[in-house]
Length: 187
Image 1 (cartoon, rainbow, N blue to C red):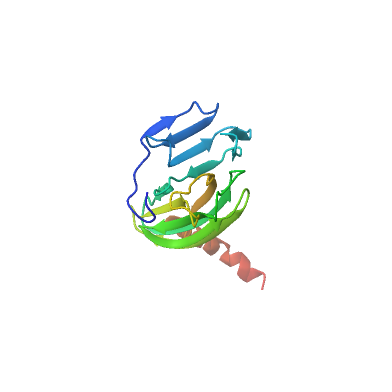
Image 2 (cartoon, rainbow, N blue to C red; image 1 turned 90 degrees about the vertical axis):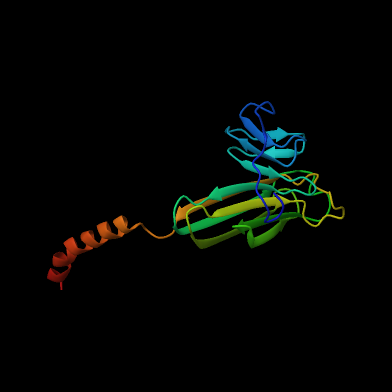
């Protein structure tokens, strides 16, 4: 995915990198996404540290690596995210760019300047069914246009409904109404 551009799912899946590590990529191996489904820390490619149960993105020189969330229904959703540098060598120069896009429009941006450096954010968005939030990693502001070496970046994101559903509010109201006589008696 170009920053804020069209999203294309990865074409290849491979689970042979290490036991418990899934790897999605395009034909040349990058951009890519990885997931460590084990309780062990895994050293991939002698420079990339995959923490237990960690999801990781790695860009190509001119194409970001992205994880996409699609809204299942209209409503308010609360998001929080943390990007963390997971390559012991990187980034090669400058910093790795990390961004969040809502329907292709940038809503947050940051950078990762080394191993275990983090960039975090959170927000509540009112979304329609089918709206998308893309979490992206790009080659950032390196000295060279295709400088994407050592830009492997972990992503942890959480999505929750920010506003209770009407049924939940009704149950709360009925519960409070049921306790009203007890509250009055204590006065």
